[in-house]
Length: 180
Image (cartoon, rainbow, N blue to C red; front, side, top):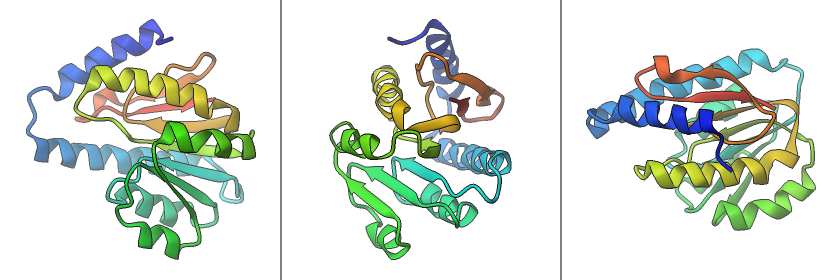
């Protein structure tokens, strides 16, 4: 079930980007992703070697950032298409190709309480559909997230008990940081 506060955040987010062209949106999105990933890095102790999940590989830009700032952490990547898999496989990290809702369940059961950070960026231009997708993703991934884990996402995630630490509506592209 989607929480009312997430629906409110969602509507603010949609209104915020409505007038921007796609190139401006890409620039704004990349800027906020950098800020949020770096913020998460500052919140997780350097000696923490817990698992990091990248849900939504796309062209590999955020993964490339994650593998640099979380160089000591094992990274598991999920995406529905194999763009740039050479970079993932070359790093010794794990890449899962396919629909995240089919691929993730067995991985969750192998990682109960082990994931320290999940970066989820699988939003589309279909904002209404994204709300349901993210609600399902949050519920599915929750058992794998360690107590105190951080979740950065490009859409609000509806999971009971998670705390919204930062709502990036003050950026030109919306992003959210949650603590489990």
